[in-house]
Image (cartoon, rainbow, N blue to C red; front, top):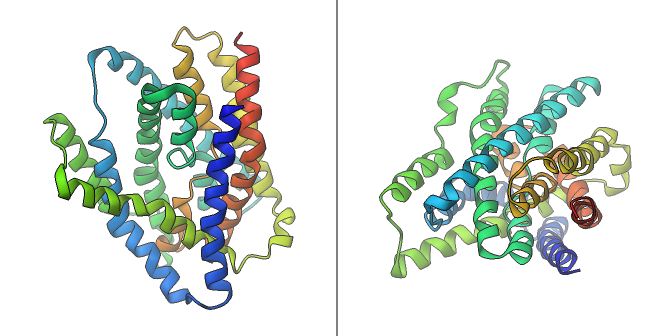
Length: 314
């Protein structure tokens, strides 16, 4: 019940913030130009700061190293498998390139921070949050390497694969800075730390406002026709997590780690993808619709996955 309430509260917060953006654009209180400018602020300012301030708060200990490596290894495999499934279905549905790349990214990358963190912290406490952050690291590493590499192929109408130089972006630079600071135990403290944490903390809400504004131009009554998105949601949030429940049942690792892995895999599509899709010229409406469908659906699927996990692992 506690897990369900956490999921419900998180989705309600998402929905309220998205509604603000939706109505602001719908009534022309915010123009399309302003909405697009918000995406640039996120990608170039608030997100890199969020990456640095979040990762440098993680404290590592020797007893967590082995579990951390196992979790990251399984996370890499799970994300890669979901990306391949997304690629397969994008070909089966014969999606155009700008839509196919977005479909692949939405299949693989989940909302593992804003929705994942509060849920896992409520269920498994501070240590659970640590492992959730490790999965988020694996998820974001894929986003800012493979994801950006694929999306960059769409920049300015490019027809070839993205140039590797596009991997050098504000977020990947922020990752490098974070690792250096973690290695030497450096942290932002005092007024500077508070200011940067506050700026980074705006990322989720700005992203929700941006997505809501994008949804203002979406015909919600037509969503049921997006069969490819429905299939994506089923595989991402039900099929893959259920398979993992059966597989991990026989893997001799800590119960909490297995649970965190499955819950993170089962998260709805990452909201940041709508921002990145705009930045790199992908199918933004498809991204917004996919995020909308998976986020709403997660209200039912996440509690169901959690319940199935507890029943089968008894």
